[in-house]
Image 1 (cartoon, rainbow, N blue to C red):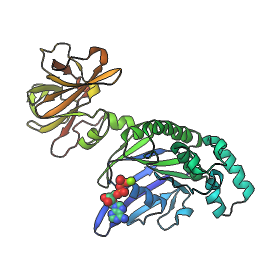
Image 2 (cartoon, rainbow, N blue to C red; image 1 turned 180 degrees about the vertical axis):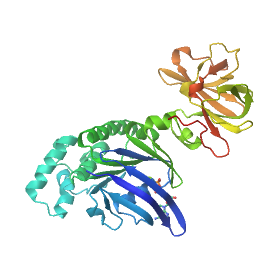
Image 3 (cartoon, helix red, strand yellow; image 1 turned 90 degrees about the horizontal axis):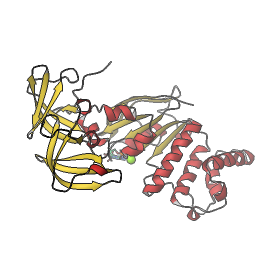
Image 4 (cartoon, protein in one colour; image 1 turned 45 degrees about the vertical axis):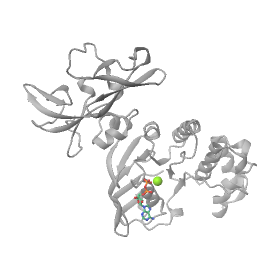
Amino acid sequence: MANIICAHVDKAYGAVNVIRDFNLEIEDHEFVVFLGPSGCGKSTLLRMIAGLEEISGGEVSIAGRTVNDLEPRDRGVAMVFQNYALYPHMTIYDNIAFGLRRMKVEASEIDRRIKTVAATLGLEPYLARKPTELSGGQQQRVAIARAMIKTPRVFLFDEPLSNLDAKLRNHMRVEIARLHQSLKTTTIYVTHDQLEAMTLADRIVLMKGGAIEQVGTPAEIYERPRTLFVAGFIGTPNMNFLDVTARSDGETWLLEGDGQRFRVGRARFAIEDGQALTLGIRPSSLSVAASPEDRENTLCGLADLIEFHGDNALVSFRVGDREIGALVPATGQPARGAAVAFSASEDNLHLFDRTTGLSVLRHRS
Ligand SMILES: Nc1ncnc2c1ncn2[C@@H]1O[C@H](COP(=O)(O)OP(=O)(O)O)[C@@H](O)[C@H]1O
Ligand SMILES: [Mg+2]
């Protein structure tokens, strides 16, 4: 088993820096997800850790040993890709055995390991088949088996479920979570899908433009996004935003913009008089206002779109040039065109400096 340390890791292609001063310590047994939009550098980082890409600067160590100059096969890692690329002319058994045969592992040992891995992944009935005789999910399971059988110290997954349809993706996500619960192998999992990240990760590393925006547990990142970017990236439906200006009013701050007005205590946020802020409220944090005539901490408008989600409905309305969404119980959904008012409690308000994009929430000890 192994921990992983990235210290001041850089990657440049010619003059272009795609990873800048990346620092992270991953604990033994941990399941860490690299999350971020396409092109932010997730695969590049993973490939540097795997040894498939040269490290331009800094150091990567696995289980206490610097691996910068080690060949991929000497790093104790196994990688699973989006394109599982099985050998089409070989049986599933031979596909799984392939790597070990190349490593000159004895046939009886290979057979023993294949039996164990196939049992873990439910592949026993398919060992004699060819890849084309398997579904996409089963093929991806074979790719995982091929990685597992090397008994790596570290699993690296690069968007392994992106080629599967939504239902299969959910199913495989649960399988990967179960697998990690039983094997406990240190894992880095790359995805651009925030739901996958939220459901799988012990910790999420949220990246943007080759640098870390925030590292934290899914709950920490959801509840206390450090930047406007994180707030907008995490959570479905997306967080609502409203531009406001802060004004001191006795023991409280008044936040005003687009005809809306919020009042917050001084304890929670570090704000300056006149500061330009962006207020964030999740659609699920809005509830139908008990007294709509009381305009404070309430968003008002005309419901212009109602999306039925089953138990809930997403009500959309305009405030200034912003589209606001409120997630309400479907039983209490308003009619289209009706005047609506939704309030949010202060605990559910997020505030960011509009210039820096940084949260102005005070640190809690
Ligand atoms: N071989 C390469 N040469 C030049 N630029 C590259 C190369 N590979 C990746 N990049 C650039 O590095 C950045 C990060 O890419 P990548 O790690 O694949 O992002 P992600 O996996 O997050 O989508 C992108 O801007 C991409 O264009
Ligand atoms: Mg990628």
